[in-house]
Image (cartoon, rainbow, N blue to C red; front, side, top):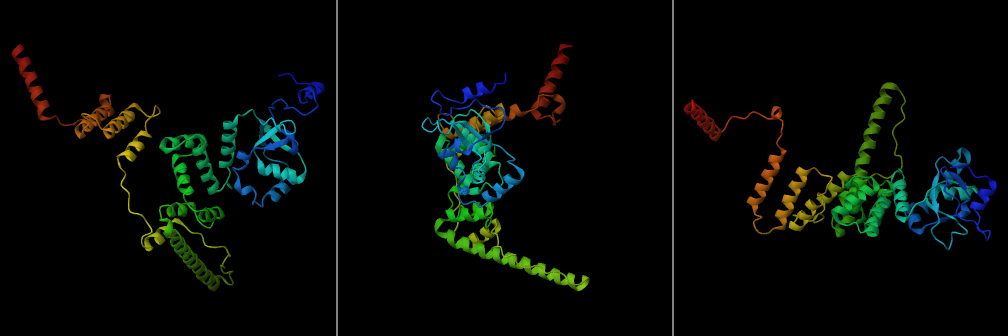
Length: 365
């Protein structure tokens, strides 16, 4: 692509009425004035912690001293009402944008042509890769994808996992997180409770959750107190042997509730856990159907199809029919290479067949 001179560049970024137009897409990052960047409400809402995050000032100091290490991502503004004044729309990099606005400098951005779905996916992927991305935000993202694209059920779980590049188990865990009250999610985000503890709290009955949470906190406090006591004893023994030693002191931080604390609290609280639920035919059928697809080997697909047909019922689809279908699947799994077969003792029927063949050969001679 030939380079444009100054006059050609000026023509490319100006409309006949003199208002700024959408510049040509850049292959490399460019510095863009923060006033020329519009915000998309849907993309901005992906980071709820932005408004209360006090690290923007620290980020601004880092950018002032070391420069912007990572470029943000923008696309041409699809909103015609604001595209004249703000030709770009921010996809991700909201904290960097706020920091640059605080410093009064331009924002270094990568420019890409993206539709709404591509912009949403790019923003989600960029956020999910960040360590400071909270559990509640991840859970909210999963719920938003289910509502936005209608990705419900096990098959929707697969699509979300592929969309975000995570395991299906992660999506299922985030679904369970959305059922938890906001105060539990705040504890997880603040580090006062582990994600595993929150998941252990999910099956607890709603009316018993406050009591279980309080008891789990007591157990966590007791565990922390015992650890500090042991540390103090170790420090005393070391001081007796090696001279003065700085004893371990309470760091002032609240104890962290773990999964084992919630499990014990739920067992101690009467009626906290619901009775075990035995899945019915529709649930089993939905689970099997979620495992169908071309990405699975033909043998596994045949195995799943046989179970689905059996669960659907119908004429002739009895337990014996299922056993016969699974025997066909087992036969397909047998190795075709003779060298890999296990030598088994011949059955009585096979022995009779061999003897009959020998007699036939003797009579023929």
